[in-house]
Image (cartoon, rainbow, N blue to C red; front, side, top):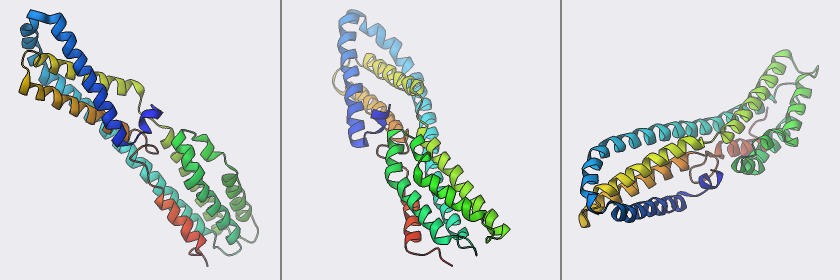
Length: 262
């Protein structure tokens, strides 16, 4: 699954098109050889099944694609939440008595790790590696040491702790989003329904060469496109459509440029 979801759409669609087209060609050869003179009877059975099989495949693909699109949007929202929680922490670090520069340096280092090495870990499926890092541990320790300092007022201390806890929780949400993947069984059911639809279309036109083959071609392209779109959406941190790291990179730039200062 990881291999498929890591492919770009321009490689994924031709690959699936080749697979489904090969199945259609093999099905055509096998059907003509084994049905022989009974092909006309098979056509009469296949015709009523086309609307049912088409509706089943359309329902399954629409349901799964909508679910994966929701997951993709959720991953984008999680990245945006990390950026907003980081900005909140950066502003909280400007409270009187807080170690502003130490906190912001630790935050910048941790966010920079997240959008570089951490992003690579998410793409490879190593979600734990994003959480158990020295930069994250250092950030937590720096913020909590400052928050518990007698020089920091209680409201400022509470804001620092709330901000760093929010960032930590959202970071775990990001790791969970990267670890989520399309269930193999669900993909197999959708692929099977598409293959059955394709084979039924082949039976339908087995005795009608020429223009009728357009029916099979249309089904092959449709099934391949739906499966490709599904796999593109199945992994928010791999392949063509990935969650953008731009919001986090923007916060890093703001910290490094001194935007969050008293």
